[in-house]
Length: 165
View 1 (spheres, helix red, strand yellow):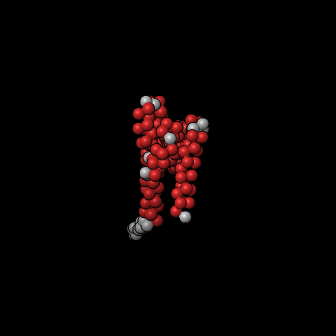
View 2: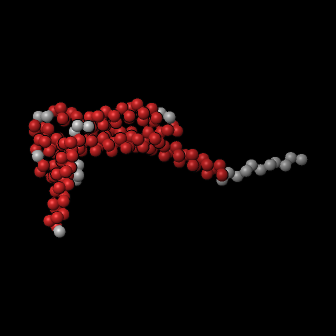
View 3: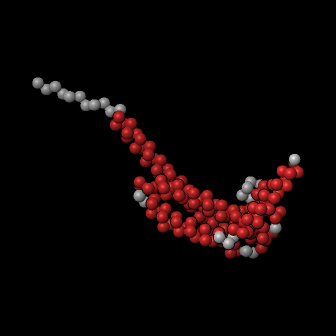
């Protein structure tokens, strides 16, 4: 039973590494589409208060996809440069291990172009997460202010009439 679990785990890790190499073909197109959607759709939506929540959710989802692209890109690089063992070690230790291992591999192998691409992906992930979180905070603050105004309006004491005779 334990041997079967180990075999299934190793088969999954081998599949993940092979998938990352296969995914290299469509990663640039996905990245370009995502950046275009963020800049041309989500950022203009963030300027309109009523649609700000859509931009916030979209940017947070984009951050997750950018992070996944970074993970797949790093895993494929490590797999192609150093083989399967560093990929497995990276995935076992924290799940995001292929990213720092890819940085080390790029420095040792002198792959500065890859290192630049990785920095761009990391920056895109960080920027969309921060901006999406900031927009979410603005939307939440506005919703709380509106709710407080509604509560004040329903609990207001009606003005008394003055009896002037």
